[in-house]
Length: 102
Length: 102
Image 1: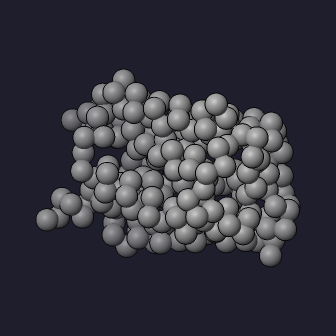
Image 2: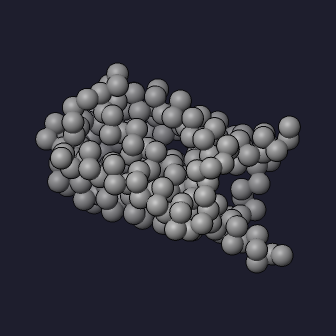
């Protein structure tokens, strides 16, 4: 498998695992999926600009070469992983902070 | 224009930053959690990105970056993760606030 494809898949899977391991379970919450949809919506013009101009040039050796518009499909998994890991950790640390206050 | 990548980052950050203040999003009160989350995510993704950039997964068009490099990556690419983690947390908290208001 191409390296970026593999890394993107692993990071997305890891984000779901982290949600389980830390017990945050944000993937069952409505606000998580709404926030994800909003981020993905705004990802299209910004990621599209970066890949379409192109500001970032992708090496065909490391990704599948399948693009939605100008955006490599791996970027969507990569983005999902990045956003999910961020929100899982955020939720985890905020809950810990709140518990300490009580 | 050399500032294009930086302008894209500014465009991504502008409204979330503005609305986090206007909407009085309860995220700066948890600045410790924000710093921890952003520190871990940026640390991990910076490392990954610097390694695969060196490997040749992608490159940055010199026409559209300012030309300031750190460890082989344009400064814009480093800032990308700070911007994205901030915007993710904002979008999630703003969604939560709007949902809880109903």
